[in-house]
Image (cartoon, rainbow, N blue to C red; front, side, top):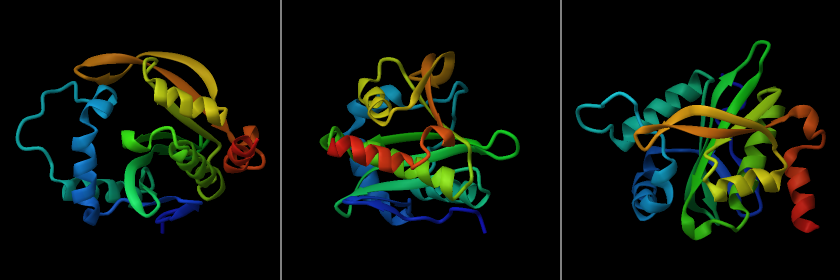
Length: 199
């Protein structure tokens, strides 16, 4: 049994749950509707990929296998019981590092409603409390304003630029790294986020 998986995490109308094959139609429609909004930030392969693209079922099976191995947590983001995006905890490492990275996307029609910061806060607390991790990081293109606002709202620490960090849109792109350790949020990140939204 993998610690912390499967998991359903809820705060108000925001729910994180395992991504499932039955999400295919909604997920595919969201990605198509949001192509211009999301593709500038989507990772690409530096090596030419031949043959047909994997099916959505194969995509979910791969993520589920990684979840069972304890290296990835693939969450669907629901808002008011409707799928609106995805959040993935990846690069989970234990040992003396005890770290993970969080990546996410949401449909443009729900951007700015506090859904993504709430989802990231839920996932970060889950990493600290259920997985026993010490550090969570988020890597963001410097040009990605909406994503930068998410980490700013949550108070992630800016740790600087990683040059040529990730292959996106057929070129190696710089990213800024933002991180929190468990000592940064002794009461939990969700509690801190709640206090900021109320304030």
